[in-house]
Image (cartoon, rainbow, N blue to C red; front, side):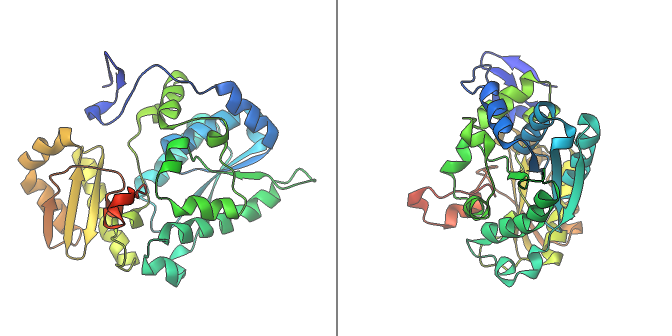
Length: 299
């Protein structure tokens, strides 16, 4: 259940909260979409890309908007299914596009530029679709659900996508994360309070090789914990050890259910199971990178 408190609407478990104030203008986003005319939306199903896809579809029309979900071993099965469900619910023109980032040795090596390698693979999949969506004079614009808050994070993938021609309509029209969630709520989109998500490879520490087997263990562990009812969490991979981050509001419950959590995570292939007492924090994998600079990526 969602509740309304003094500060506004609070998501289930207290994981997400927005107030009813926003300075972002939906008209500004409409104007930016009008300028682009035809778009290919990188559609992960998260709050940002879902909002962008729905608004674009409503504004430009179904035939002018193609929503594309990149499918690879780093995409959780729950996210893939939700993309399909959203496309059906909203009448989106939607396709899946396989990406092959694991074939890139630089991606698998998992250096700090891993996200850039991933976005390069994404753009390699989207650009041919943008050409096929051409109106005869120019390709459709490839658009990503990047918002203003993302510009403050360590996200090398954004630069890689931009260098390949991607555009960020939420940025150019002045939307931050709070604006996206608030406007999504106003429009009645069920994604308004969807927990933050990131690809499964983001759970692997820099310098640890990303493999299909590693991604499968993370996938199975997180799927099991999601079925258990946890909402905002990560299973961070440290070889045989799984370090679990949960929202602080769910920490006591996680401790109370430790035996069940241990059983489920070990069944996914881990030998040791730990609970991070600092709780869930987006970007914690980047804490090893120049902490003084506040570097952070949505990992």
